Structure formats: structure tokens, C-alpha cells
Amino acid sequence: LVQEESIPVPKGIKINIKSKIVEVTGKHGSLKRDFKHLPIELYLANSGHEVRAKMYFAKSKQLSMLRSVCSHINNLFDGVQKKYEYKMRLVYAHFPINATITNGGGTVELRNFLGEKRVRIVNMLPGVKVEKSAGTKDELTITGTDIDLTSRSAALIRQSCLVKDKDIRKFLDGVYVSSHGTLED
Image 1 (cartoon, rainbow, N blue to C red):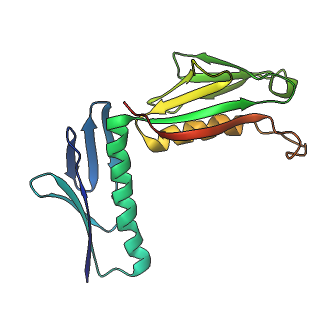
Image 2: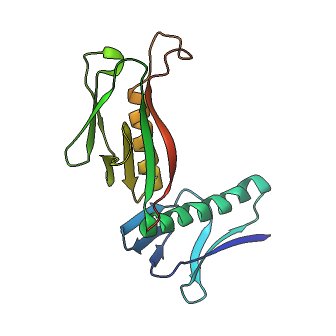
């Protein structure tokens, strides 16, 4: 009849739930996420040290969203505590791809992809920064607190450099995500 999932709130994080809008504040800023499209109950229990998601009369397919909501909220916790980081490598066989970061880490310009003259400009989504990594050549680092916006920015960069009308098994040029995870302090 009733199914419940609970997740503990980590130390040093303020959380606020009001009519299925979850707001999480930590040392890297605050994130907000709206769960109004789901038929669940979200509330703080255990004097604010625990988030509980509750659902009544659900079939097993519908119960899967309880776990999803808990994962989303955990991702919010990780984001405001540690930040997410995606590392991307510039891969090329012949023409070196030239990446320029403009707009204070808000935009990437990719030049000379497969020797093309066109400049590919990729704007990062709000709250996401991109930089060239100091140690490794041809590597971009994308950081942000919101896992969705960070991973989508990485995807936008990857999609900007797709090889058209060629055999992609042979032409492996492009910008690929090499690793991703949370930033350890």
C-alpha cells in the first residue's frame, strides 16, 4: 500500500522542501529541482536529517520513480558539496583541433576540426565552467554544480564535432568525454 525511501542529509547542507520543490544549499551554492510532475510525497523527517519520499498504491513500474527521486536529490547533495567534473580529450589523426576558451570559461571555440575553416562555438549552459587542463595536452575540463547542466554541456561539445559523410570507424576525430565524476577536495 505505501512504499517509502529515505536518504540522509549530509553535514553542512541546508535543505528546504516546499510543495515538491527541493532546494539544497551547500558550500558551492544552491540548487533547486522541481518534482511536481511525480505523484509522490516528499518531506523532511528525523528533525531535518533525512529526506523521505513516499508513494501510495503504486505498481512496481511506478515505484521506480521513488528511487530515481532519491538519486536526483543525492546528485544535488554531491553537486553543492563537491561539484561535478567532466574531462574531455581532443582526438585527431592529422589536423590538430584548436580549442579556445572565451567569455571567461563560458564558451569554447573549436577551430581546424578536420581542417575545416568553420569555427564551432559552443556555449556552456548556465553555471558551468570550462577550462583547459593544466597538466595534459588537448584536454578540456568542464565543472559545475548541477549534474544535468554539466553533462549536457559536455554532450554539446561532443556533438559539435561529429564527422559527417565519412566512415566514422576510420575518422575518429572529435572531442570525447574521457572521465567524469565528482571533484574531490
